[in-house]
Structure formats: C-alpha cells, structure tokens
Length: 476
Ligand SMILES: NC(=O)c1ccc[n+]([C@@H]2O[C@H](COP(=O)([O-])OP(=O)(O)OC[C@H]3O[C@@H](n4cnc5c(N)ncnc54)[C@H](OP(=O)(O)O)[C@@H]3O)[C@@H](O)[C@H]2O)c1
Figure (cartoon, rainbow, N blue to C red):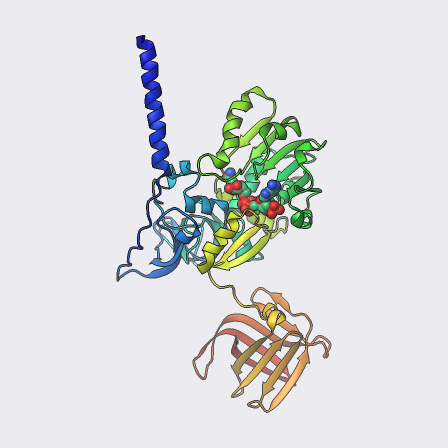
C-alpha cells in the first residue's frame, strides 16, 4: 500500500475509533447518587433536584441549602416558575450531544427549571438595579426551588404591576425565543405573510401575538382543539394540521417560524416566496441528533438557494425581557396558561410537557397562590371568619350571598351581592339590594388580632346594619 493510502486509512481508523468512543461516552448514563446531607449551620429550602439522567422519576423535592446573594447578585424568592421542553432535555441529557455541556454520565448541575417570577428578598454588594421587595421575572437555572440567586446584569427584569406572577413566569424562554425568532431571525415586517407551525404551544402562542404586533398577516398551524384559541390570539388564518397540510397549499409565505420540524426542508421551501426565510426553532425529540437534524441539513442547503433556513438558540437577554414586560403591561401580549402544578408535582408537569401537547404554558406554583375570596367562593363557597370590635363575629361568603353573624351567633343578617370587584389584593363586595352599597372589603394582608395576638391572613371591613366592623380574618 502506498504511503499516502496508509496515512488516509490510518486517519480514517482514528476518526472511526474517536467517533465510536464519543458515542459510547455520551450515551453512558451513570446511576443515581443519594442526596448529600445538609450541614448543621445551613438554612434549608425546598427545591427539585436530580442526580442522574432519566425519566421524571429521577426528580425529587428535597431540602437543599438556601443560597445567599453573592456580589452583583439578587436573591429572588420564587413565586412561580414555568416548564419548557429545555427542562426535560436537561433531565434526560438528550440529545446526548448536550451532555458535553450538561455533564457526561450525570448532570453537573443538579437543579432544574429556568423560568421564574418572584420578589427580591436580598441583594448582594454592588447591586444597583434592584432592591428588596421588587417584583421581578427572568431566566436562571434552578427556578424549581423556593429561592434563586440571579446576577442583576443577566436575565432578570421588573415585573409589571398589572401582570400576575404566573403570567410573568410564563414568559422568559418562550417569549424571548418568539421575539428573537420573529424580529431578529425572521426579520418580520408589516404586511408580510408569516406562518407559525406549532402556534398553540409555549413559543407559538407568543410568536402569533408578537408577529401580529409587528403588523404581519399571520397563519397559525395547530390541532383542531386549539383552532379557536389561536384565532383569539389574533391569527388571521388558522390551519388544523389534522385535516390540511400547509406545505401542500397554494399560499406562499415570507417567513415560516417552525417549532415542530415535521416537514422536509424542500416542502417548506416550496411554500416560501423567493428569498423567504424559515426560522427553525424546534424539532422532533431524539437521543442522537433529534432536533438538530434539520439545522444540520440546512448547513448544506443554504449556500445553494436564495431562501434561507435559519437555526438559532435564544439568549436570555434582559432588554428583551424588558420589552416583553412592556408589551404585557400594555396588553399587547397575554401569556396563555394551560395548567398549574404545585412545586411537589414538577415530575407530573414535566411528563405532561413531554407529551408535546401543551396549550400555552405550564405553570409551577412555587409559593401556593394567594387565596381569592371571589374565585374560591364562586368555586365551592368559603367561610370567612374574623375577630373584631365585638367579642366575636363572622362573615360567611357563599356564591352570591354574604351572611353576617353577630352577638355571639344570636343575630344573622344576609345580603345578596354583585360580582365582587377584585383589584390586586383587595376584594370589594357591593350589595345588590342596597343600591350598590359596599358591604364588605376584604384585603389579603397579614393582620394580627389586638386582643389575642393571633396572626391572620386577611383584613376585613364589613358594613352591616349601620355598623362598621373591622377585624382580622381567615378563610376556612
Ligand atoms: N431554539 C431555541 O432557542 C428554542 C427555544 C425554546 C423552545 N425551543 C424548541 O421549540 C419547540 C417548541 O417549544 P414550545 O415551548 O413551544 O413547546 P410546547 O409548549 O411543548 O409546544 C407543544 C405544541 O406543539 C404543537 N404540535 C404538536 N404536533 C404538531 C404538529 N404536527 N403541527 C403543529 N403543531 C404541533 C402542539 O399543538 P397541538 O396540541 O395543537 O397539536 C403543542 O401546542 C420545542 O422543540 C423546543 O425544544 C427551541
């Protein structure tokens, strides 16, 4: 064999052995390790942890050390988090190529979750953007836990006052991805025809609203059960993929934002105008290349065509978070929330996300949501009991009816009420019978009874029979 052929054969062998070794190493999954104990002097908090790759059973709610904010960091008390496909990619270490970053054999970082909203609890030295008590949202690994330290110059922004913690937690990854896909990669302009494949999911529901706010004519693609929801977000046209294949239609698009990756590149190109753009956001799952297959093909195709296939990984940009906060505050985008899970049920939430049928965002209530007298009463009726300026009085709140019980249970007075007005933490009940007279104002705020010293969750002011009763109370 000539020397040149020997060198070629030897090089080829080395490449094959190296690739085989990489495949073996990347595909190796180490067994789970037990949780390390907490040191006696550390303060504990609850968080979801995982010490090996695998299905949602590898996730556990554990006591872990509560972090302290370092220089330049804020410590956020997390109120809500949201689930993204990224979370289960990390949980499974899949596609395996990502283990080069997340850890070979087992995860390097054992905390999960990225999207959070909450309140700044403490700030480290040199922090200037935030102060304790500020309401914030953003993205940082470890969001499925009670506290999270975040660098003030990274992915964190102020939460608008008129946006709930759950809505804010829905935004970071999905909202920023949609914004960067529409604005930076798709370069969407007013009047352009934009198709959004996967319009009913986390990214898609934001992409429809953002493309509309840019003045585009938007077509959303989703299953039949989500057609009306996608239309309600502002989509001009909605295609049910169960009955119609958009790549077989006559319509041509300037930009396709693709969250699903279920069509060949040639089929997508067929429905682009000349020079059009496909933004490849997501693709089918798979341990080896999975969502990376279409982007890899695009590398070879792009140099030979006028159209452009653009793959990107979104970056958690604080200015983009700020822009999304402004759009939410102005009511131009509204997060779509599919369902809520408590922190202890993150494994169920992730299993639901893995099915790939989420309708908007899946929220994790890290702090149990504050109780709302109206929604609670409307659902099942509640009893609100307060101590006040009589030895004992209580107020029953049932759907449509308030009952005041005074004189140690001797006297009952009833009022029918209009639908209560809920503003922030305050709920106001107006009487139906007495020309809209306010009969009760209940405010969710800590309250201590002056006689007993007992702590309550709400302050109540009740106007019945010409007397005003004030007291501290709780929902029973
Ligand atoms: N590149 C990045 O930086 C980046 C960032 C975020 C997310 N991603 C990726 O983008 C993808 C979407 O993320 P996501 O958060 O929106 O996920 P998601 O919330 O889980 O979205 C699931 C949605 O996909 C829809 N869907 C399933 N099959 C479909 C089909 N054949 N045609 C059209 N829609 C279909 C479902 O709608 P129906 O129930 O109506 O079928 C569901 O609403 C994922 O692959 C994710 O990993 C990438």
